[in-house]
Length: 80
Image 1 (spheres, rainbow, N blue to C red):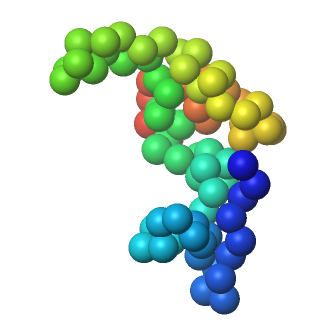
Image 2: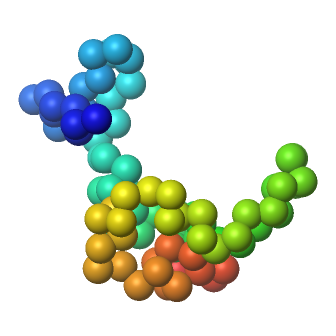
Image 3: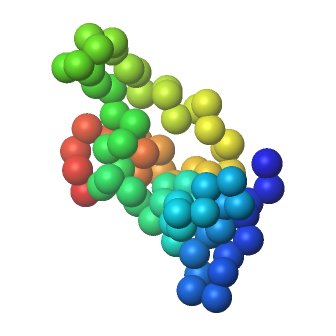
């Protein structure tokens, strides 16, 4: 799907969810170094008991991670 249009305030507008108005796309969040680079670190969920590896990020578009050092900015176990 195409990225939604932005309104005058710079918020993304989703016609089917009018109350949802984020100011960043998922790509912009990743490029900004979201969650200190630890969002896709290997973990075992305390709720579901499911283990997630360091490759979970690969299900997303590759261009979201262009220019990022994956080990430091995406899958690090150390918050930066």
